[in-house]
Length: 195
Image (cartoon, rainbow, N blue to C red; front, side, top):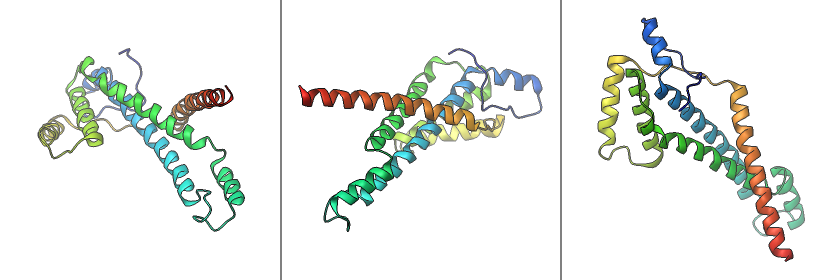
């Protein structure tokens, strides 16, 4: 993993030499990027869920809504900003989550160079389990316990902040990729039906 300046890290503690060393830790940089990718995927998930809720509340099916079918379809299209927005939002969320999973998969290849880097790697492992498994099954409580012990000895991960500019940029990147993907699928469908 190429070294780059993290947008999230601010070392803790009194030892400035330790702080500078920790900030160069590739594991901290990886975890910072992973946290941002997960945050972006959650934002896009919320967008997708809002659009999904609008579809469920007003599906445009006569008998399920009080309006006429034509009126309902017009309202649904207006509320969604177009009939493909839901598909775009869903694909953008998938793209963002895929980025987070790729970062997660690269964890074994990244060496921690500080104790706080080891804590970061364990945070990532425990955090990933929260998404996919039962945190009460072995070995997750045991790993979480070791993580708590390490934090008690060395301190927690540095608290970070996300710039709105970077968040917007990351969301836009996934949204644009999803728009291209959905447009390509739309063209593919149109070609199948016309051919």
